[in-house]
Image 1 (cartoon, rainbow, N blue to C red):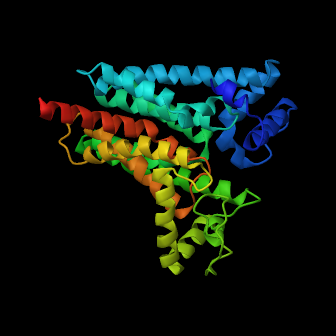
Image 2: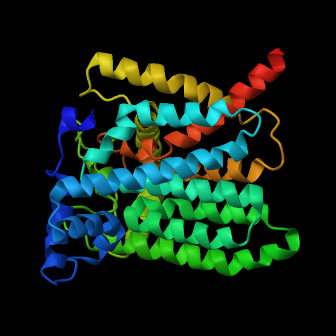
Image 3: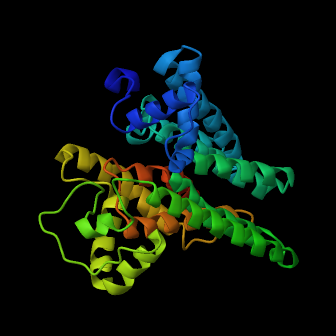
Length: 351
């Protein structure tokens, strides 16, 4: 269906990754260090071109990865919903049926692999939480690395993974989180610095300077800001927030509105209504899940999802939202899990 609607999309953002893949085929290195944080998609395209199976092969590989992670995710969901075997199937069905989420499989962008890696990481977290097998710790680390190498946004799961381990470990074992936290912070700082110092057409404060709610969509008027032009990207970002706080708050909440509700002025009214009709019930059910009683075994997974959502929301406030809602879509499965838990609670209260 997606192939019928869109074909294989190789233009726009995909062109960058195709170009990098061609460099690898010609025994050259990636043109900039930041492309390592998109490297999984680049490697897939490289393998497809090297094997002469073309971009169709890339889509097939992406789809197979998605299928494998969906199956793993389904098995893991059974641990969260042990007495309600239908719920994992419903969550998988909604995930696949929601076109804004599933359609990225035919795009040679990074989203297909990124969304698959998020499902893989979440599945590993769930399985570790419910089985307590030490070997799965290495799977969590591996899937986190894959998520980071799928797209720079993958670094935003580092705080959630660290917090998951913190609440999962016994008090005596929590000291191990100190070096883990230092390493995680180091990766966050390194990746942020690399991405914004090697990108030629953007800086970390460009979206603030332009007043963008949605990345690349310029407002009618610009506000003159007090910005720092020297120093590291994070120094520049801190200076912007601390010296233009009212601007940051106003713009930040406008970005959160775009991030969570997904509507866009350039979408049709019908499209916006569809998105709201779909997402608002999920938010209502997910919101209720914060206040209902949760079984102790489920709490670490709940904290992982919540910290992930909060981290993404903070970063959106500091930067801008994606033109096609790609940022919130990565968290879409979390909303389905939270909503599923609330639905079970509501049904049990009724009975």
